[in-house]
Amino acid sequence: MERETETVKEFLTDLVVPHHRCNVNIIPDHITMLHGPKIKKQHSRKRRTHKSSTLNRREYAELGLNTLPTRQMRYEQALPLHRLWRGYMREHLDLEEGDELPQVHEKRYEEFSRQLVKMDLHGAKLRVMQSKCSTLVGLNGICVMETKNVLKLLGEDHKVRTVPKSECVFGMHVGNMEFTIFGQHLNVRPAERSVKKIKGYVEPFM
Amino acid sequence: MANNNNKSKQKLLTQRHVMSRMNFLYQAGNLMAHSKQNTLAAYYCKLGRNVGTKSLMHMSPAVKRTLCKCCAIPLLPGINTTLKLEEKQQQQQQSEKQKHNHNLAATNSSKRRRRHRQRKRCSAEAKADAAAAAPAPAPSGLATSGVLDEHARMQLECVLCGAHRRFVIDAQNECWPERSAAIIQVVTLDRPTQTLMSTNVEND
Image (cartoon, rainbow over all chains, first blue to last red; front, side):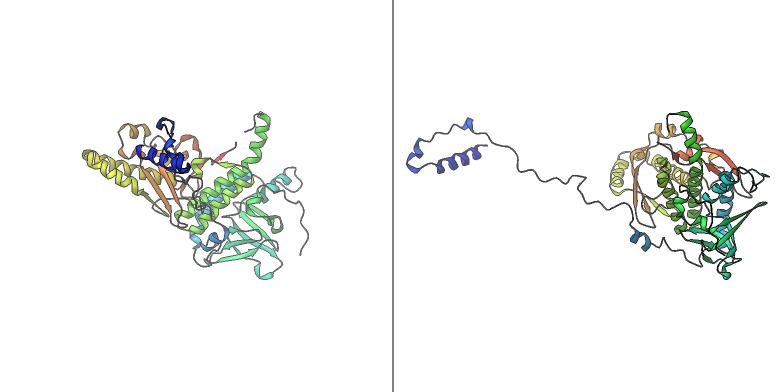
């Protein structure tokens, strides 16, 4: 404190014209010093550059999460998924053991078919009944992946096959019930399908 | 939920299908993670999360936290995730251990128990009757026994994308699958039994 007041006095007397310097009288009580050095700029937590916690599309693809290897998965590995799916399907469609499916002329048919299309297909055993492309007809397997336009079916020969939706009619066989689903209804992104409204008609395509 | 009873009922009906779908996808993801199909596990869980965002429904936080923030793979320590004590805390703990040398054994055993609990939480559906048969270890008992690593920081590292998740051990905390309210029905499939959880869905 002493030294600082000295420097201040020196500084002030330097400013005065030389022949008046002897008259300068500085009362030390009048000097107020600001304490502390200059505060270091603190890096607040918000400002710290923060690695984004989510992956962007490119990073996601680099991890190989968009591609499914063709020949890695065994058919047996998908069977528990199929069992799980059967339970889910019963819950989703409100089916009990021995329930009858609604016929076309019944009232609840429309509601039922709407729910059928909204159902999740991962783990379903699907078969291609009809198709524009004749080589696709008769393919069957457990659906393991779904995108907007394509289903990936894991066949019994442990091979993943890609089947376009819009060109095909899929058949599903659960217990004693048979379902037929037109692929055109399914042409929605899987995440949106349970929310989006679905057209009631199908454009004829054969 | 909406305040109006009628409205909430309607909403419940429309959202029920979404809820069951999310539940199914979460379970499918866990199933795939157990059979080491990381791509599919991440895909299913991510899809489940997306279905939630599209239909404006939330997973309950306890369930949400079992998924990786980054790639949405279910975090199963020992299968696709490494679980470890954080470095700083470890040093502190060591000094503490030197002080309380006699408590060392207790710490270790409790840690093991904690780890066991962690694993159990993640594989709740896979282990069929685990939830039904073995009641969750009494959290109050753990807390009162003077656990040394009660507030230790643990770190989960996802092997797939390298993301970290930190958490502080809290014996009072109960995970959603451990609660009895989480199990709505036990469904027996062809061979393995499976526990169906009422998912994750909370509507604010």
